[in-house]
Image (cartoon, rainbow, N blue to C red; front, side):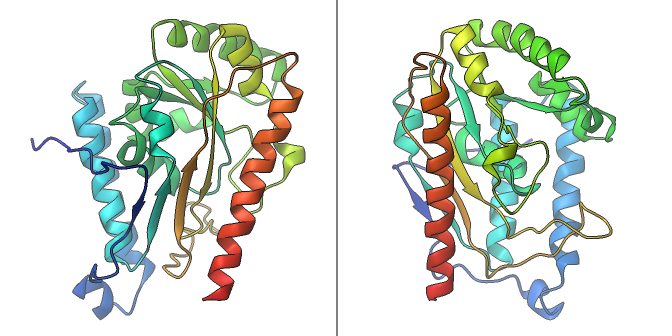
Length: 270
């Protein structure tokens, strides 16, 4: 099997303006099913690789790179900022905290960050019932939580997350209860701050905009594909948790809200 190569050398990346759209995508008049057909194939191959216990770092990058190129073949533009903040960690574990917008971020995160950081996710327990996805998450050692009992969820994150952080692995947490195109600070809990403080590791904030892939109304996982909406990932500098962490929580919220406002303003100006 071909192994993945990490694509990004500098602090940032922007899809080159001369990347052509797929001929088949154009012949299909920009149908969403072009994206979903190829994305599902990548998803299945990744899951089977995870089931065999062969989903190495290089293969994670390989499959995720395919998703990134798929976005670009559909006319999407990908922008990444703050990669040097990940490099500055030198592999040191952190808790990464950011917003959750669509399925696209989990498909792209390995392409964006895996070459610089060993990480896993905190995910909803129900996702462990999804074929192929559970194989991927099991291979990553993801931490499933039920979201029905906050006390039990906090205990699971503290216990399992603490072990992973001590072992040198970073943890990505989406504190929102569900993915949403609109960022609501009221639904952005502080579980990531609490985990980082308890484990004695820094927090690294990130903001993303992945509404290129929308959430469907009838079938949530089969929403519209919107190439006019650009994809953004931005990472901030790692920060130690001081005091009760409330000030840092507010800073992360402001970071995400500010980036989203800026990115959307740029789209409207075009």
